[in-house]
Image 1 (cartoon, each protein chain N blue to C red):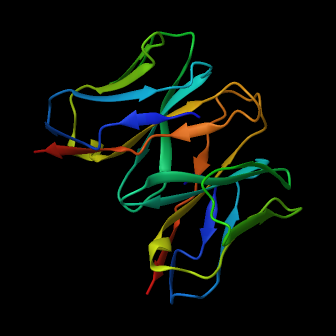
Image 2: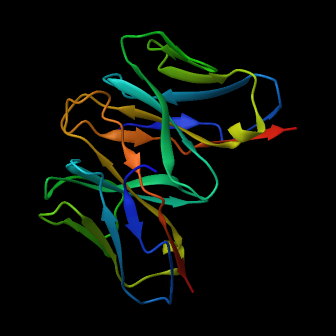
Length: 112
Length: 115
């Protein structure tokens, strides 16, 4: 079945760039997502990329997709303390009901 | 505010009991998803409903069940509760298939504590 893996924890200094990585197994993925969960809140979509794209940039966020290696990354430039949260990678399959599978989440800690 | 509401926000109960969690999706969304988030298991997909019908099942225990009503709100029923069922339960909704990236909008969650 589909599987999405991400590291559990990342710590960066304020002002540095953060790179959160994710790998997935479903080669039929159509969309790949990054969700953000702030403390005490639900998940919120940050950005998504269609599987025929290599890169998507949105202000401080850059998403890179290597479809051959099934690797997705999220780069946050000039990381701020407000970026401290858990970041979830997710992929949507093309078959059936287009199931979305989430990773376990990477906790980003930004050190002032 | 995602537009998805969940009640109650917190629930404390004892082992062996039964609880019902409620979710109202965003206006117009037909799909409702239930997830369980715990520290050791991460975010686990439980079940999805689409326009009142069960669409997909994930890691949902037999002690758990759900339904989606004609007004599209959904309930997750958890019975014979165990300590390990303590977790955050999220509901999410999404628009019809084919609309954009099919983003899921998450509710604020219900924190269940089983003592």
